[in-house]
Amino acid sequence: MPQLTRAEIASHALFPAIEKQIAQHLIAIHNETPRLSRLKASHRKWLMTHAMFALSLSRRDDDPLSGLTATRFVEIVMRLGAASRNTATAYLSELVAYKFLRDIPDIPDKRVRVLETTEISNAAMMRWFVGHMACLDRLDGGNREATTVADPRIFRLGQPIAAEILVADPLWRDPPDSIGHFLWSDLGGMILHDLIARLGDFDRSAKRTVVGVVTLAELSEIYMISATNLKRMFKKAESEELLGWELPRRRGDLWLSQRFIEDYFTWQSAKFAALEIAYRKSRQQLTIDQDAAAA
Image (cartoon, rainbow, N blue to C red):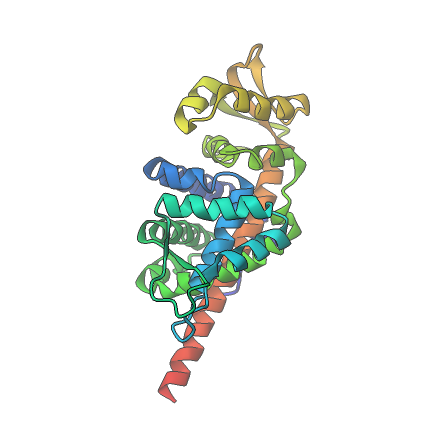
């Protein structure tokens, strides 16, 4: 089956449907593990989290000092411009405190602290990965989801590949301004997922799409975001006519502009394309390893 390109994904007739599907999937993960989701809800934290996972999954049994160390993590975060050195170090400490990371014991060099992701973190990231595989399957009738569930090595090989592609991709790393002021805010990404999850069947060529009644009070309660932060996110979008309410004082149905939706879809297509590449490269690597072992 041919590899799906970014352009093919973004223009696919079912792309709005899988965007709604993945939005609902990510909201479900958030609802089940809200503390873990809060640590990945801003785009800055997303970049740091995937860099951290990629390092952890790159650990080799023959090299006890390989994998995730604070030094390697800070170097990557600084190179990406995702956060300051102090913020990156504090982020690792936060993950350890929440038991999303733990120390690997018996490291031969006591000066080096090597960390690994815990079972709850791995399960959540695996679920994230598999959820995207299910969406890609829907586009071309593939079997990525079932194959990955049957062989989790695809996830362990694939996540670092996808992370490397995405952190190097200017489109993904620096989202369009239309959606960026949500994504750079804590839990703003969840708000975007919520809005997209409300989309029904709609005309992508329409200048505006109504998503139903939405109140900031409801969003604040669901995602535990202060009203002040929510008002700040929406005020900028409203002032640029990216979205708005049909009645004064944010009452009635909410509408999303075509630009807002399409900028979000284009940005998301980068992620799906990276995961498509990661899946295929992982399968190829496993085949190479299998052939080498049999030789």
